[in-house]
Length: 353
Length: 253
Image (cartoon, rainbow over all chains, first blue to last red; front, side, top):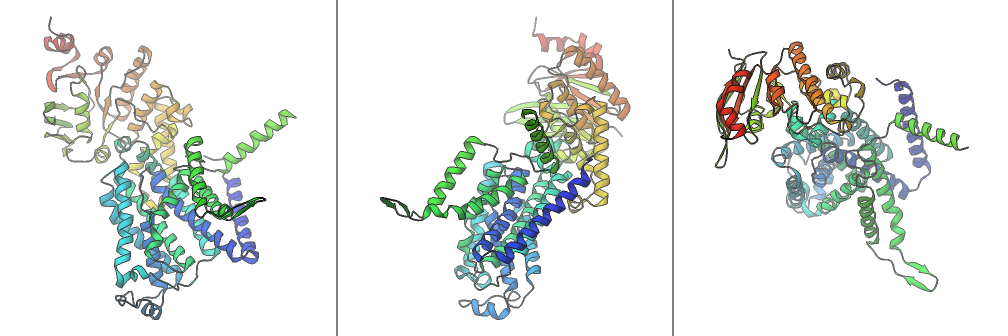
């Protein structure tokens, strides 16, 4: 079907190699702050791309990623803490058995985080997909709050409001970017497969999808559970990046950030989600300057905390006015598309000269 | 065993009886028409057969199996495909993708196998593509396979919707006003197409249509609905002579 298959494969390998070299140089020469930002970017790529699968590709507008990230973060954290550390941390009430004795390597804890979160997503899917549209958004928003409140109150499992502290800082560039690359690769392939097409069919017209034998509920569940799996792994990475987790970390604000990313990137476009995750995470840091005091020669403007958020809101409003479909719409980056663009561009400049 | 039987099918929306005691039996290979004035309940009958509405009472049997209570996607997979009165294509996907999706319900690859492109999935994807192109050739749209479905003119969209329904592998095809909005030439082509498809895929066709010339030429039997009730059924000649049918369409003289 595609005559450029070989060429594209080679370019993909080169692109991955470039990313690797970039990370290696950052690993060797960048300071802690820059590495922290790079880790954040990878983390938000994972979260945004997997959130986009259910919201953008399958078109089921839901607001639960904070719940999934929380479940993943707690699962992973409880598994990597040693029994002695857990005994120390749970000062109000002791942690329940078997959590008190289990201790697994980081990688296994991430897999467990994914599986446990996917399982919760699966259970949650049965009630929430009885409704559609705005109702789905509200129900899933409620679930997000429920998880946070439960985390706050199950003292013997999550250590309640005290949270879990002193997690090992396992999440480095290789873990975060390795998993980000895998997430993008897997979800892109999924979307291109016939399961992905069926998910899109459910988004465009559920009745028509059913008329050609597509079980809409099943495909929503597949998208939701897959999304939960990756959000859970992202949660595990997050826990071992910031090394301290507590229920206040997983408020709706997290979901809101991800929502901005997938909408600005273009609902349904993986490329868009990736670009938006990079730009918004990096931009959020770069924009810190607007919160610092500014000296304009004769007057001095004091720093206004929260100014970044005002700017972000403005940018979002502008996106909504001038690019309703987001940055990419539902288009994706492809090598063929890129080469077509380059050819068209060289053609044009050759004509002009 | 009867091929397709509907008995005492009734649909009430609150106090309104949309369809009342509807009966029909289709033999394999027949082309049967369902006609009646606007609001007679024709599309409601289709929606009940295809699993979009749960009938208030009555039974639908297809090849000995009871269809009521099944979901729309299950009914399609058991061999009953439909098209819609207001065309419902996936307008943002390409023409060939619209037909390929219809194969998805018969895919044997698992969710993981498809995403990881295991050999079985690659083979199946090739079959999907080739099969879809085959159906596009059938409805003369193969040259437009890469176009966006929504960009096609109306008549072609109708044909594409038929190709998509066929790709689910049906034995009974429900067509809801297939000739609506077509000019006389297109209508004639459609008539030939339906006859050809019936032969080739051994289909049974049950259709709703307002174009009387089309219905009378194409259908072997016709059933007439008015206010949810069957007022006549028979061959096209019998229907044309029927007093009650003329009355329903033209009013009392």
